[in-house]
Structures are given as C-alpha cells and as structure tokens.
Amino acid sequence: MQLRSLLVILLTVALVAAACGGSESSSAQDTVDPNADVDAAMPDDDASDVATDADEPVDDGSEAATTPASPEPTPLALNGLPEGVLREFGSPPAVPVGALAPDLVDAVDTLLGQRLLDRQFDDQTFVSIRALGASEDPRVAWWLTDLLRVARDPDLAATISGSLSQLLGVGFDPFDAWGDSVDHLIAWDIPAPPDYLTYKRNVYLVVEPRWDRLFVDDSEIDWRMVSWGGVLIDDREYDTTDAPCNCIPAADNPRTTGVAEGDEWLRDDTIVFGVVINDEARAYPRSIMEVREMVNDTLGGRDIAMPYCTLCGSAQVYFTDDLPDGIERPILRTSGLLTRSNKVMYDVRTFSIFDTFLGQAVSGPLLEAGIALEQNSVITTTWGKWKAEHPDTTVLHVAEALGRPESDLRNTRDADGPIFPIGDVDPRLPVQEDVLGLLTDAGDPIAFHVASAINALERGESISVDGINLVLDGGGVKAVDDDGNDLGGHQAFWFAWSQFHADTELWPQA
Image (cartoon, rainbow, N blue to C red; front, side):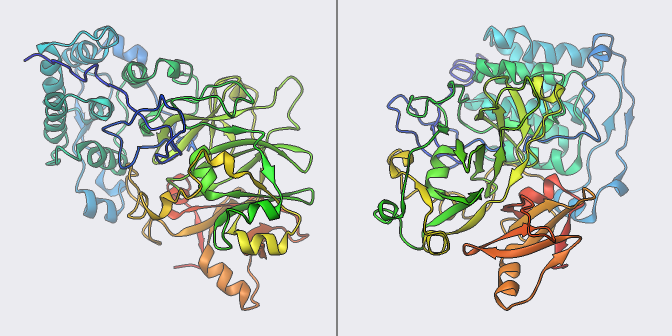
C-alpha cells in the first residue's frame, strides 16, 4: 500500500496566522490548515505555561534504548488514579517498564527515524504502525498520537487510529482519535517511552524545521503534553510588529491612543484587559489580544510582556527588565505549540521556553540562568468601567487588530469548551469558569472563583486568605497583600489553572 501523498508530505502544513485559537493574520501568504481544529487550531497555548514537571522529570532513557532488553509488563496501580478518571476513561492497560523490546525499537526507528526526515514513505510505514499497535506497550502510543496529529493522508490516519484502539483497548472514533487518545493518555498518566523526545522531534521538524532549537533535551518540560497548535512559529526579530508572517504575529511597542479615539471603535461593554504600572494605565482590548496573543510593551517606565492564551482565557503581564547582569531583555513570542491547551511561549533571542503561567524559564540559556519573571496584575473588565476609573488611560490602537476589531473567539470557537486535549479536569468547577489564581507566600496555589468574589466584594464583604486580599479595581478584581501591594495574580479558565496546579485550594470551598 503506497502512502501516496502520505501527508501530501506527511503534513502539508496549512495554517491560519491567528491568535492562540485560530485567529487570522492580515498577511496574504497565510493559508488555512484543513485539519486545524475549528477556525484554526491555535497555539496556545501552550504551560506552559509550558507543561513543566520539575518534580517528576521525564526520563527519556536514551542509553537504555540503544541496548534494549525484552520488557516484562507491569500493571499500572489502579489505586493511584482518582475514581473520576476510572469512571470517565476506564482502567488503563498494563504498562511495561524499562527498555523497549528490540523489535519495537526497530519499528519505531523505521517509522520515525531518518526515513521520516527524508520523507521516505512506503508499505513499511504501515507495517511499523501496526507493529506498534500490537506491541502491548502503551508507552509507544505517545508517538502514534504525535504522528496522528500531523498526518494528512486518510489511510495513514485510519491505520494510526486503529493501532491506538488496539494498543489502548478503546474504540476511538477515527475522526476524533487524536484528541480522545491523548485525553486517555494524560488522564491515565501513561509514561513516555525511552528516547521519546528524539523521535517526537523528528515528527515535529517535518512540520516546522525552525522548532529545532526548542526541542532540546536539557529542559524542565514534560514533552508528552506538547502538541502542535496548528500554526507556525513567530521568530521575527524584535520590533517587527508590521512584518507579515505565517504565524500569530506578536505586537512590539504597539501603537496607542487616548480615551477619545478609543471611544470611536470600542463600546462600553467591550472586554479589555486593564494594566496599571507606576500609576500609568493602559487597556488591551481582548479582540486585539486574540489576534496578537503576545505584546512586548513599555508601561510606567517598565518593560513588560503580555501573553494571552485564548484557549485558557488567560492574560498575564510579566516584567522583562530588572534582570541579572548579562541577561538581555527577553522578547516573548508564540511558538505555535501547546501544552494541555495552553500556549507555549519562548524568548526569540535565546529560544528559551517559559512556563506561561509562572513566568519561569524551563529550557535554554535562561533556564541555566534561573530566570523567573515577576508578574503584575491584569484586570479583566469592560472599556466603560475601565475608562471611568482610569480616565487618563491609553488603549491599543485599532490598527493593531489587523482588520479584526470584532474578534470574539471566547463566545464563538471556544464557547463549547476546550478544543484541544486536556485529559482529566478537577471536577470542583466547570472547565471554563473564570478563576483568579496565584501562589501564597508559602508557595501554595489558590484559585478564587471570580464571579463569587466580585459579588461578595460588591456586597461590602472582605476576602482574605493567607495574606491574600481581593479588591475591586476598574470593574474587575485583583489580589493585593495586607499593605495594598499588587500580588500579580492572573485570571484563567478553571481547567487551565487546576491542571497545572492539581493541589490548588479553591475559594469559596466547594
């Protein structure tokens, strides 16, 4: 069976240069990805926050893979999984430990080794896929899902889907096999196979060779969780806001106006993200942030970067100045990759990846330097309420919307829940409830249900937990300490906050 156009190049990459969730760029070169989830699978959004797992780093086991021994299957302990996971996803299959069996190593290398990079596809490609499906080693399912994510050839996709069903004991719908199988793997916490990153990198470099500098072994990234968001990398140099690209184009030093000109295109009920630094206020309309997803700006005399992940409903502001000697200001960009539906952002100068939720470098030179960016609060509110409390505010110019000033992915594409795999979700709140999340002085995560907090504060009640006090500001809510100092919390969907902070406290308690 010939692979024919196995992907018409395993991945005729087509994208929509749009915001983390598939917004469109103004570049005439932009093309639509026929396989992008809804409207243009975005990045995200990857946390990512890059999915970091500092406590349980992934062991690629490269050395073991070179001298494989036949593994002995060891059942995964079912009592380590929550009842909700077992109820929703069923019991996981037995998972071997140690090196892959020699014949399985050969099948993986045939499928995802140099032949893949050389685009040598033939009947052996399908033989290798079926061998993985019959291997009884669920760890290799991660490679099959990686390949399925980028496959365009119907026969190839159907063969991978069938192998995943056989391997995991789940009857996957061929039209949703990628998302469903990844959800199962995440929920069951199936470990990565030995030498996982080497072959995953090969799959992704066929899509975007410029990702090569991001897929590095020396990192604090759980590579299982990293997937393609449907768009390519934004690797433009600093201050190239207007340069066209097949990417989600960050805005550097964006144009701004005052309230009067903002009123010409913003309604009072338009959602904006309000930021105040050293008494200087600026509004970042959500519609523009959906198109740009990343802004590198200066406000109140401070250099800042503002990532927005449309998929997880999270806008954040990080200070990118006041860094150790010898560290140049990071210029943050969207990579085109996601981790559990959260954007994967990186510094274009060093190609260091940052955990989007925490602002910590998790790969590259900035990880080696131990860089962790300080966060400033972002107020989610409306233009009418923001300008009323901050009459001297500036606002991003409508030109920064690249012709899409009415973008509203939250109420269109994302209205029915996450469109990328996220695995199991803490059941205490619906997946897309807004929470304000931050860490206590002791480093413990806590999330405040935003609607409940605003209602309580508007009734005159006080909210104080472990030295964290919530206050109203510009029609939204933010966290301050006992002296009124900003604590830099940020708003996000519940699924996004809780999946990266599985032990988070919730206010009010369920």
